[in-house]
Length: 273
Image (cartoon, rainbow, N blue to C red; front, side):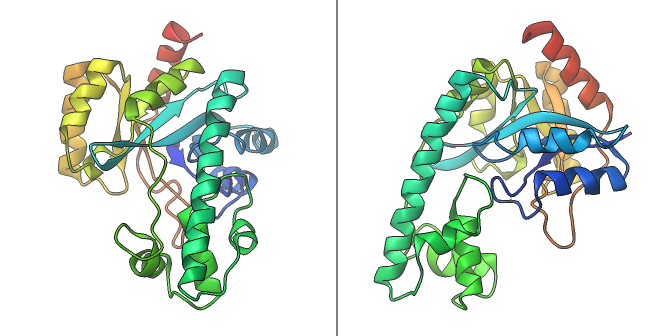
């Protein structure tokens, strides 16, 4: 059974709608997928609704929360979250407002640089409520100020570049709390991308329940390394493509063991109901 437990949609910085993700996943023979948009759960109901058209695909409600620790970005995934939880939605609404404020400030800096761009033009690139630098980058490409997402970030949006605005920062520990608040299972995303590894042990001590072992940016040596950590620390293992609807499409390209989904379900039923 093919599964993919890390997928983004147009409700954050992906290019495919939730319905398109489900349809393509079904066509590829995936049996379980997790919608893990950045800091929002608004796309989940659309994915679940689309999945009802098919017999053999399960949509796992998830999220990926962006956090900072010791001046590095750390992402925390949440699985089987109760996405209609009132407290969760309040926390995410606060994060969304901070994202919007940041994007407005980026827009102001770009205008000061002589770039002909408006916040409304940037917002139109986001089909969902969440908005961020990737949408700014796409607007810059469309208006001829950059050749690619990477070019836009290199020229304007990365730290040290003229339109950079620091993100509102919450900690990985805050994210673990937010996910547990909604009776979800918190998992450390793509640990191989972390520069400072001490956060892994700190999160384990704090109560994170899993670690993303398979990821598009993990080589096999890293996969084995994080599997060993998970086994030693009795953590759940997950994996996913981290697909954003790019070309060529990454969705469903990793060989993720079906057992990961079964173990997530078992843990959800044991601890988080």
